[in-house]
Length: 73
Image 1 (spheres, rainbow, N blue to C red):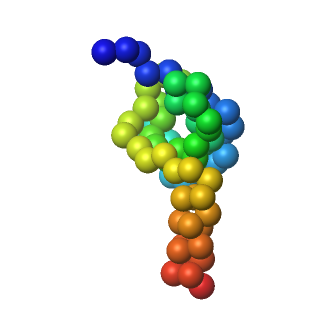
Image 2: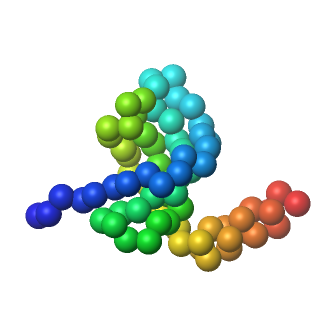
């Protein structure tokens, strides 16, 4: 199996800080040199390891934002 390449384009912000040093973050990430996507996942303090997460296209992120705005008013 080939190695997966992950390049952080922009660290947008921390969603949750954990006591163990890992943070759940929103980032703009390019996977295997593809177009960047919005990415939510846990990252180790040194950014060397990551947990499972979710990636969203710009359209999906905008749809999610609309749903959250509608839900929270």
